[in-house]
Image 1 (cartoon, each protein chain N blue to C red):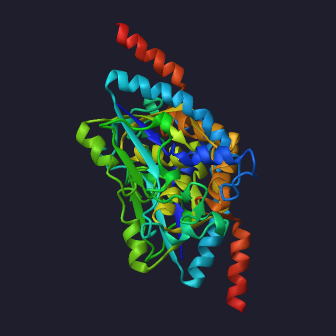
Image 2 (image 1 turned 60 degrees about the vertical axis):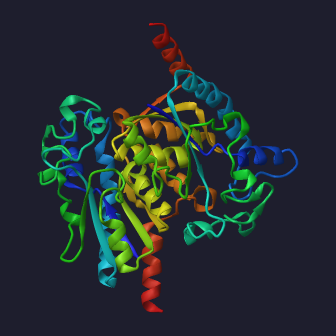
Length: 214
Length: 214
């Protein structure tokens, strides 16, 4: 099993900070502060996985500085001042190597934990995630990250088609939109678990503790 | 541009017929009759694309009879009597070549229209869809099919990561669950169109008529 942690980059902190003195991020159209609720549960799960010596993989969406890997239709969307590659308060938006693209301090990778830079919402598209999981014989993914309905849902759908079993940790995911968070989780577990399962981090941590005692 | 039509197979008819004398499909957990609302709008759009000589691609989810392409975690889900490969009223469930796996008569492919048999929810995974679109120089997909939150959403997410522009035709899609249909469409067009656009078939058909006159 592996803990796959998606897109918890410093940009969410930046946006949260800006909230106090500016309107919500117009490109994203909403209140980015909501994403921060996932950080603490995610930190607890990350610590538990590390104590157990279980694999952890970090991912983050972003493009090469020349945007040669960014599809035109993706770049041209939304407010021009907030597009991919445009200057933001933490460097160019969604560009690799910029301060906002780095993973937040609380959830920073430690030595030996791979970081996957992905050009899409799905963590499998144009990355070596599938190869890494295959090489390690991993078939079960615990998924954390933001946002629930975008990168988490897209990655879980990709994983499911590829034959992985996914357990999405509900409180370790978040969205700008509460209804998308709720529905994103419901869509995963509907119809007998059409894409995977959903559990709280508390349930997982309790299970891990029990397994350690037994 | 291309009309991509997903998973409108005879199984939806079968399930709809069974509804009158049995309980809703337990594997799918809901009322499959709801899917039929997409058929008529889909037929009108299909006819318009054909009159214009525009490309149409049909897809359907299903597995080889020996299930060697069906992931274990996918097969083992849900009620054992309604699993992939189990006998159903229109042949083995989600198995290629079975009566229920064929496309419904109203939307049947005509000569020259490719049919893609896909092993997953996403029409790009392990298929030649990307290659076909690339070879034809197509960058815009009009998407119809069922269900809105499963195969339609997964395929649109894949298409978006691959740089395609997607317009999902709202009334040409359907779900067992009205709230998933609505939210599935909202998730696509949120944040300035994070995965694509949503339009009604009426708007598209009106636009096509205008273009033909102009």
